[in-house]
Length: 308
Image 1 (cartoon, rainbow, N blue to C red):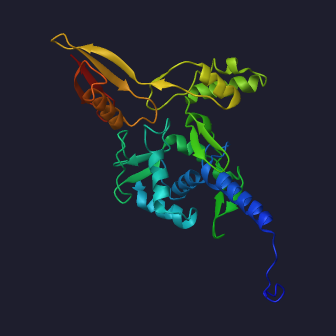
Image 2 (cartoon, rainbow, N blue to C red; image 1 turned 45 degrees about the vertical axis):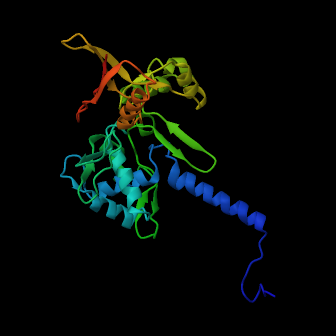
Image 3 (cartoon, rainbow, N blue to C red; image 1 turned 90 degrees about the horizontal axis):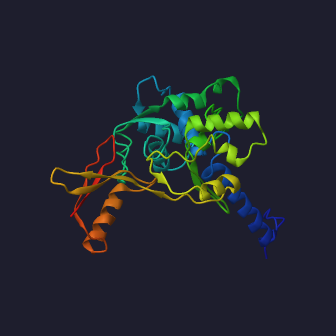
């Protein structure tokens, strides 16, 4: 028999324990990991990276620092998780095809829209962008609440002051316990105009807001097909946005036409797209194509589909 008093064991109903433990776990995932804070639009890992870069003096007008040093500093002081999770988050903030407004200015190989991985952190360098400095502005003036870090030896901001409406302009996505979010990015000027209109008229309608904020502004551009799903998303928080690539017709000297794709839908892997088109041609599900080339360069997308 177990002597509860002697062994200092507290009897506990397993149903109550599971309820409480699961609730604590789900709240931890929601608040501390998976979902962004609406005030600064950042998840904890992103906030800690930017704060860590600020503490290292890695601002936009100063020389870049090794990404490995930034990751190590963030790991040791604020975010005691795997180094790959921190570096992956840093890399994404530097990708112009992932972020409408990059928060990190990366030097080196930070991956590509074709799904190529970034170089190891020891080879790349990073610093903040100009827009990031606006997110950290006046942090030292006690504009936000501070909390202790994981081992209670340092203090870190619970949220950034963020003069930039980051949640709307860069969007966010995450899956927590029992809830999820996927917010598309928007144009900064349109969002600011919409905010001014909201301040001037707190009872403004969705239709009036949409005269200022026309819709999402994706970093890879593309074409949004229809507005019904967009309006539903703005009104209810639930909706679908259908997108397609942007293409035009070019005629060569011999008179043959080519379909040239210059923009792809957001979060589309370009290399996979080209491969799928090639598969359709090979399987004769699509006919009339004589050649398929990816002529993309660093500054722009160009996929050429030559017709017969």
